[in-house]
Length: 251
Ligand code: IPE
Ligand code: IPE
Ligand code: MG
Image (cartoon, rainbow, N blue to C red):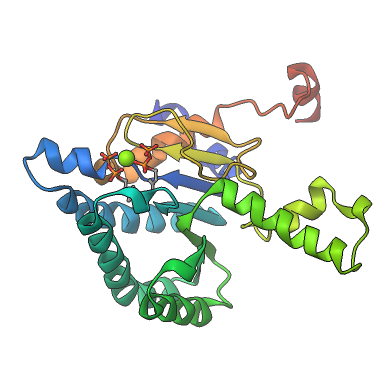
């Protein structure tokens, strides 16, 4: 499949915004007789290669689901390790991101994280604020429903203090208060690990995203796997409600 597409054609259709539900770390480790934590640690290498490849391809925004608002329900020991790992990765990788002109941001309710972790996040965001090569958003304590409810709350408070009228609550104004509204629309949503669900990820933003599911467990997701997903995306016809004929006429 890879050979049949020339690189020029690929470049033309590169998705501007890709998001990934990085799933399957636990099963990857269990298959090897290791603890789930080992899988999370291995998953960090896949994060690094995915970021590098996205940047190389010219993807403008990459959004990675690292920890959902539901993941607090996991055993306390696993949650603690995930928090430590997040801290470790921030310490280790932010300089590299900065060097590669990548802007880093976290989306989600960070108020539940330790103040030390919040400080690290703020420092990384500030350091990389003016980078323009790509935006890397890490979704941590993120939930799609939280995101929409939060935007609704902001608009409601603006109505309450008379700074906007009720009629000004529109899809567009709500959109501006959801996470990632400053980025290109989500084009491609990848989920590794074989499950076909969204798990409360970018519910609002995924309205017209192309969905790509792979059985590959996250620690095995490498550059070649990512390329397969991109090639699959380039072959989709995105109709946005129109007919196939209308779309072809506009090409
Ligand atoms: C995804 O892998 C990582 C996080 C949710 C933090 P999992 O830990 O969900 O791995 P599986 O799905 O149990 O294999
Ligand atoms: C989704 O994976 C969250 C992340 C990848 C961070 P889960 O493993 O938590 O999803 P469910 O619980 O199987 O739906
Ligand atoms: Mg999982």
